[in-house]
Image (cartoon, rainbow, N blue to C red; front, side, top):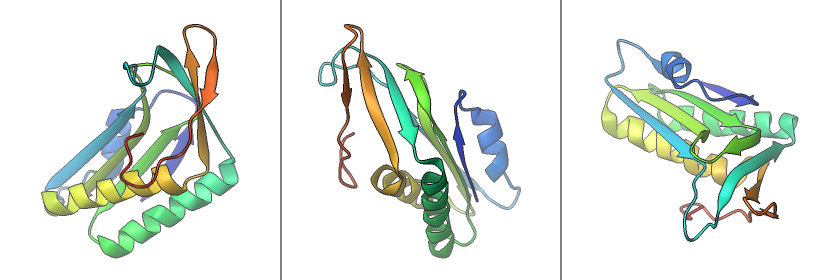
Length: 143
């Protein structure tokens, strides 16, 4: 189990390598990508900021909780900080488990808990130069 906050692009191959094991038959990869849509407006980037020590600790707690629910799973979580342009991933979670159902469940748990609990804030930056802070959504929300 590992969590990483990074300022650079997420290396998906490296993330997958962290959870790979010949004993684990199901691997799930989730990428949360900065998007532009009619509902969100002309977003050029999202700027992520965090209180690093708290974010690292909370992500560690989330992974520890996942480990108690899915003890055979291996899970890695990477979250980008700084400006992330539209079309690039800002969050990546890989979960490998003996079977696909466990891998999907563990991955979803970590995604939802990270979005809800990690002290990571985001500000949308628009083509116009305007910016706005994004309010956190409850678990299972659409943000």
